[in-house]
Image 1 (cartoon, one colour):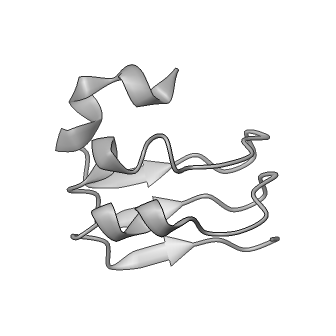
Image 2 (cartoon, one colour):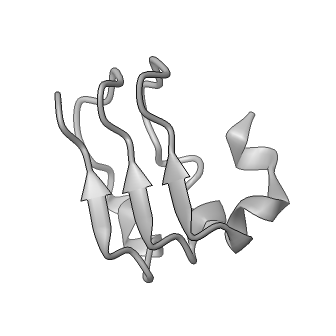
Length: 65
């Protein structure tokens, strides 16, 4: 559902912690301008190659992997 949100490209801070998501590859292109991303405490096993689309990313919280 998140990958269909066009307005995500305007966000600077995204917190999707504790949501039981398994991956973020489908939303990386939509988050191209995000500066802070919190994906902690989810079911994500690894950071995908698509994270390279997050060109503005300064802070990534990925605790509890």
